[in-house]
Image (cartoon, rainbow, N blue to C red; front, side, top):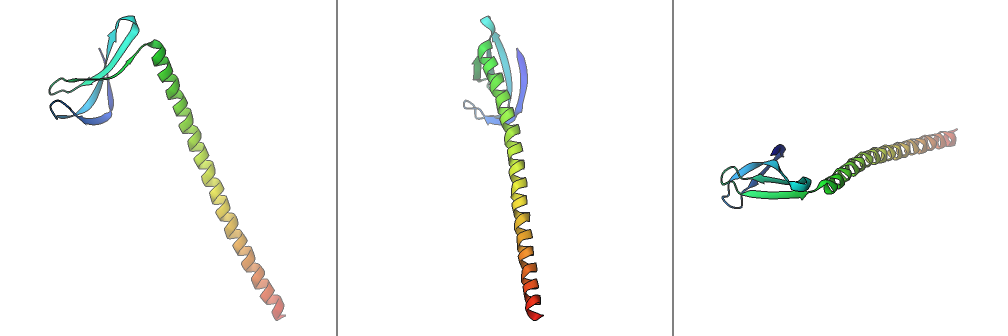
Length: 112
Protein backbone atom coordinates (compact mmCIF):
# COMPACT_ATOMS: atom_id res chain seq x y z
CA UNK A 1 0.00 0.00 0.00
CA UNK A 2 1.46 3.32 -1.16
CA UNK A 3 0.68 6.58 0.67
CA UNK A 4 0.79 10.14 -0.57
CA UNK A 5 -0.02 13.25 1.46
CA UNK A 6 -2.77 15.37 -0.05
CA UNK A 7 -2.45 19.14 -0.04
CA UNK A 8 -3.68 19.44 3.54
CA UNK A 9 -7.38 19.07 2.78
CA UNK A 10 -9.30 18.97 6.04
CA UNK A 11 -12.57 17.07 5.89
CA UNK A 12 -15.23 15.88 8.27
CA UNK A 13 -16.07 12.19 8.47
CA UNK A 14 -19.66 11.38 7.48
CA UNK A 15 -19.75 8.53 10.00
CA UNK A 16 -18.26 9.96 13.20
CA UNK A 17 -18.05 13.73 12.42
CA UNK A 18 -14.34 13.78 13.25
CA UNK A 19 -12.32 16.37 11.31
CA UNK A 20 -9.07 15.17 9.79
CA UNK A 21 -6.53 15.82 7.06
CA UNK A 22 -6.83 13.58 4.01
CA UNK A 23 -4.00 11.10 3.68
CA UNK A 24 -4.55 9.39 0.34
CA UNK A 25 -3.52 5.77 0.00
CA UNK A 26 -3.28 3.53 -3.03
CA UNK A 27 -4.31 -0.09 -2.88
CA UNK A 28 -3.04 -2.30 -5.71
CA UNK A 29 -5.35 -4.92 -7.23
CA UNK A 30 -4.85 -7.61 -9.90
CA UNK A 31 -4.54 -6.51 -13.55
CA UNK A 32 -2.75 -3.28 -12.55
CA UNK A 33 -5.92 -1.81 -11.07
CA UNK A 34 -5.23 0.86 -8.45
CA UNK A 35 -7.72 2.11 -5.91
CA UNK A 36 -7.05 5.54 -4.41
CA UNK A 37 -8.76 6.08 -1.08
CA UNK A 38 -8.48 7.69 2.33
CA UNK A 39 -9.85 6.75 5.69
CA UNK A 40 -10.96 8.44 8.84
CA UNK A 41 -8.25 7.97 11.47
CA UNK A 42 -10.90 7.93 14.19
CA UNK A 43 -13.43 5.34 12.95
CA UNK A 44 -11.47 3.99 9.94
CA UNK A 45 -14.36 4.59 7.54
CA UNK A 46 -12.98 4.35 3.96
CA UNK A 47 -13.67 6.84 1.22
CA UNK A 48 -12.85 5.65 -2.30
CA UNK A 49 -11.58 8.50 -4.42
CA UNK A 50 -10.69 6.84 -7.69
CA UNK A 51 -10.19 3.42 -9.27
CA UNK A 52 -7.86 3.34 -12.29
CA UNK A 53 -6.23 1.03 -14.77
CA UNK A 54 -3.11 1.83 -16.85
CA UNK A 55 -4.98 3.45 -19.79
CA UNK A 56 -6.96 5.68 -17.43
CA UNK A 57 -3.82 6.70 -15.53
CA UNK A 58 -2.21 7.58 -18.88
CA UNK A 59 -5.25 9.74 -19.78
CA UNK A 60 -5.10 11.48 -16.40
CA UNK A 61 -1.39 12.18 -16.89
CA UNK A 62 -2.07 13.66 -20.35
CA UNK A 63 -4.89 15.81 -18.98
CA UNK A 64 -2.60 17.13 -16.24
CA UNK A 65 0.02 18.06 -18.85
CA UNK A 66 -2.60 19.84 -20.95
CA UNK A 67 -3.82 21.69 -17.88
CA UNK A 68 -0.27 22.82 -17.07
CA UNK A 69 0.18 24.04 -20.66
CA UNK A 70 -3.14 25.90 -20.42
CA UNK A 71 -2.10 27.59 -17.17
CA UNK A 72 1.22 28.69 -18.71
CA UNK A 73 -0.48 30.03 -21.84
CA UNK A 74 -3.14 31.81 -19.81
CA UNK A 75 -0.41 33.39 -17.71
CA UNK A 76 1.43 34.58 -20.83
CA UNK A 77 -1.81 35.91 -22.33
CA UNK A 78 -2.64 37.77 -19.13
CA UNK A 79 0.83 39.30 -19.03
CA UNK A 80 0.54 40.35 -22.70
CA UNK A 81 -2.89 41.85 -22.04
CA UNK A 82 -1.50 43.84 -19.11
CA UNK A 83 1.34 45.16 -21.30
CA UNK A 84 -1.15 46.20 -23.99
CA UNK A 85 -3.40 47.88 -21.43
CA UNK A 86 -0.41 49.74 -20.01
CA UNK A 87 0.57 50.82 -23.53
CA UNK A 88 -2.94 52.10 -24.20
CA UNK A 89 -2.89 54.06 -20.95
CA UNK A 90 0.56 55.47 -21.79
CA UNK A 91 -0.61 56.39 -25.30
CA UNK A 92 -3.67 58.14 -23.80
CA UNK A 93 -1.47 60.13 -21.39
CA UNK A 94 0.86 61.08 -24.25
CA UNK A 95 -2.09 62.13 -26.44
CA UNK A 96 -3.51 64.25 -23.59
CA UNK A 97 -0.07 65.83 -23.05
CA UNK A 98 0.31 66.62 -26.77
CA UNK A 99 -3.15 68.17 -26.86
CA UNK A 100 -2.25 70.30 -23.83
CA UNK A 101 0.97 71.46 -25.53
CA UNK A 102 -1.00 72.25 -28.70
CA UNK A 103 -3.46 74.31 -26.64
CA UNK A 104 -0.60 76.24 -25.00
CA UNK A 105 1.02 76.85 -28.40
CA UNK A 106 -2.29 77.97 -29.88
CA UNK A 107 -2.78 80.40 -26.97
CA UNK A 108 0.80 81.61 -27.33
CA UNK A 109 0.40 82.11 -31.10
CA UNK A 110 -2.81 84.11 -30.52
CA UNK A 111 -0.95 86.42 -28.13
CA UNK A 112 1.77 87.18 -30.68
